[in-house]
Length: 254
Image (cartoon, rainbow, N blue to C red):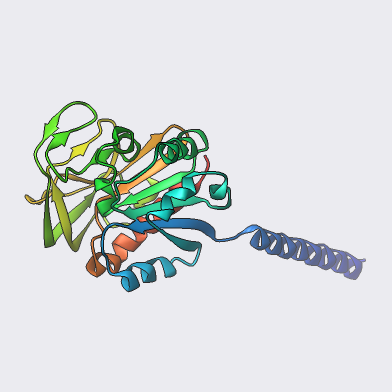
């Protein structure tokens, strides 16, 4: 009787192991890399090093779309096949139809958006874009969407500064130390929308304090990261963690 009991127990254990193994295999079949469009154009950058950073994200598959054709992604149903859009362009020309398409895909459809570095200076004459990403860098003196006037914003190359995590519990800052150093370009004298959820800050005199935030635009999750001018940023492991986390967060539909 004891031997029969042991055999039955062994058989039950084996069946449970097999079931768990099959469930794991099924889960793996459901897993697939996120599909991301990276928009470039209007500003030079170190292409090789920039895209090597994205290649290091094993769970993200990317495609580059260059301006001026890149804005066609906002028309039609192309974005149904992608999980998020990353902006790394600095572009001014956009048609009314493309504007409406961007608003639709973000506000109504909830397509995730990560805006990096110099994309803050795009579409200087379109206030809605500044509302979408939560900021505007002023190429020339002008007015923010709230009516406040600004002089021309400033940039400073090759600045080594300390970045501090403001919200350590947010998914975008997961895995980051409380603070880290980076050699990068800083921006100063630009408009930031009230109410954005601040993620990273610095106290360097040549930078505005907040350098990354998260926000909502309608149904869309949006992250802006001011860091990211060149290879000293692309190769910084904390910057890579930040960019990958941002993409994963905005791509989730919750």
